[in-house]
Length: 243
Image (cartoon, rainbow, N blue to C red; front, side):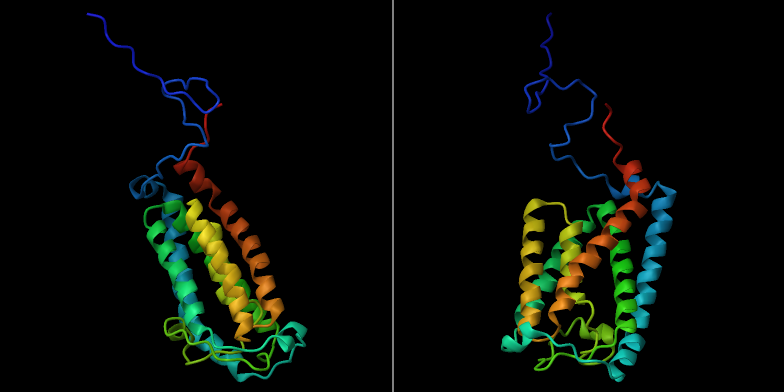
């Protein structure tokens, strides 16, 4: 009895893929699961240590922001804000931030590497932002309308914080989500959200223009460092394609 020959898939260039070889990098492949990630010792300690650092940051938030809120800083001359009328757009800001956060939460619990990179990138950029705020003492822009965010304000220890200026934490968060996401539609939404969010923050006069423009620069730099920090775990989870 003659057995049927098993069909061999072709790649996009028309050549046949050898059985047992790695898939073409242009083809979406399933993300390695948590069971595999948890077998990597370095993944475990980086995840747990990252969560500890995150917890310490959240514990320090109320004390830090109350301290910077009590100090008197410098006013920054911002010609763009002087020209731009102030409006309350808190609802739109709240929606953009937390819709992106929900997308990220949904994705990271299915992707251990995304969670590890996001965790350390967020820790790093938050610590950098706290250092910048501590070193650069600025008073809020003229015409500032306090941002109503019932979720974020819970971490600050006060109803409104107005001296956390350089650089913008809201812009940083959404732009970091854009960098960490992998699905094309997710990334497009987060990128558009970060651009619109930055403009809305200026419309509400919550930040100076330089605060918003600097946020993506610092965020991208820290994100690249987070990728380097987690490269070992990535190679263990997603081995490079055999040549």
